[in-house]
Image (cartoon, rainbow, N blue to C red; front, side):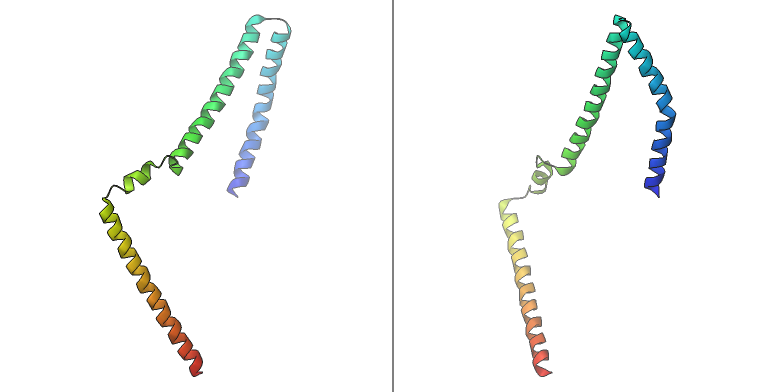
Length: 119
């Protein structure tokens, strides 16, 4: 329902702006056709400003995306500030936990096989 509301607002805004934009473009077109150099430079500067704003918007959104995804690995370097021996100890602890979990899975599997054989 929120998408439908956004679409309705966009359509209403478009209908409201259409006559204003059409009138402005018609005046600019007539001024350029009449050979007015000031109108020509005004149109060129307007287009330049519009394209600059669009390019700036896309470059800023790309910058935010790049910061969020951490392409350059800045946050990874912040996390791994410990000594290599500390990291090796953490890795050994994780391997020990994994082995104990594997042993638990094996024990439960054997117990299930016992229960299935008993039936």
